[in-house]
Amino acid sequence: MEDGEAGGIGELDESRAALLAEAADRARRYLRRIGDRAVAAPPEAVLALDELDFPLPEGGLEPSRVLALLDDVGSPATVASAGPRYFGFVTGGALPIAVAASWLLAAWDQNAALSVMSPVATRLDSVAIGWVSRLLGLPGGTSGGFVSGATMANAACLASARDAVLTRAGWDAASLGLVGAPPVQVVVGDEVHATVLKALGLIGLGRGRALRLPVDEQGRITPDRLPRLDRPALVCLQAGNVNSGASDPFVPLIGWAHSQGAWVHVDGAFGLWAAACPEVAGEVAGVAAADSWATDAHKWLNTTYDCGVALVRDGQALRAAMQAEASYLPLGAARDPMLVTPQSSQRARGAEVWAVLAALGREGVSRLVGRHVALARRFASGLSAGGLDILNQVRLNQVVAACADAEATGEMIAALQREGTCWCGPTMWRGRRAMRISVSNWSTTEGDVDRSVAAVLAAARLTSARR
Ligand SMILES: *Cc1c(COP(=O)(O)O)cnc(C)c1O
Image (cartoon, rainbow, N blue to C red):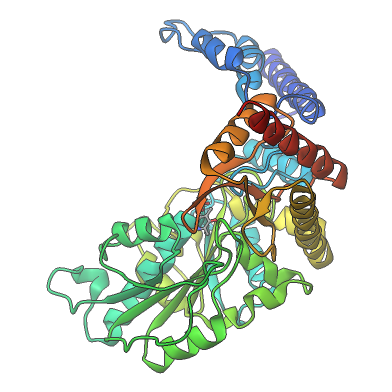
């Protein structure tokens, strides 16, 4: 049908176009001011959210009025994590191409579960998995899928691992489950990320029964006096400690685990991206010898939320663990995302990753990572020159800083968050209260780091002056 052919359609099209244009305008305005506002949401804005908590309207509101409410009341209560001075957790910040592509993808409204549902989403999903895998230096033929984040990527990889090692032990876990199965030994480092334990719980191997290997002062597993492993066994290693940024020594650890028939899984939510930057790739040397890898695109690759990546060397193991059969599902040779991920219906995450990687290229990703490492070092030396203690070797994009005592550190963080120039969160590092800084947003500049260093030091001085 031609545009505007029938009056009704023409009107519908016009009001839809107006609504989308208004959303784009509001988004543009939001992002234009993102660098000038306080990074944390002001308390008044959070209180004002009550305005959105009204009884469900009987008749529904005008869509443009809904958009206005979202923006006028909602936008001020956001945290400016899209902006250049948010250093909390490891959040990344969506690149312009990521936001723009995600808008178009939302308009497509594709279900990326099956190629019959979306030839384009499934094709780009498969291209993007190949690109990610090559960029990270993983073995040719590595299979994978896009999931909600590294938590689900850990779960998907570990489910594949569990089934594969049990299959080798003569037990069909995919159909029989774990009741009556031979016990699977699970080994982690003492600095294992909470979500690996969560994933182990989800897949029935337990949050609490893993053997924990000792770690050094950077949080890396110490590769000496390693225990003998039972069979079947899973060993979970880490690329990028969430505080220090340090990675386990993969060469000796994977050698040890493989010599005893264990499956090696690597949680590399952000740290695996070091492999894409020659300057710091040495941090994760040998990681490609593992059997599975969990990472995120929404962290260091700066896609929108949510987007994690599960990667498995043995594609058959992933497919066996993620398969689903029904008479109406056209299961063929196609690599359908629902057959390599825990999800069935899913948004076209791979298409957004494709867009971001196409726009950055290999060099762009490398520069993004390298720049963040340099900015983290700049942050650390600024703080150190100002009298703060830096508790980690700054080898990646993470800085752990502290004042002389725990109480002062806590007060400094609270003062900093209230003041609003930047946002950093608290942590405990090797028994000491500390502040965590993660540089992972494409738009952060040296100027942003310098302003943030000044704000942190001012917060620290304020704290010590009150004592
Ligand atoms: C962030 C993170 C996770 C969890 O990732 P989500 O995307 O939040 O699910 C897991 N492991 C490490 C090391 C992380 O930094």
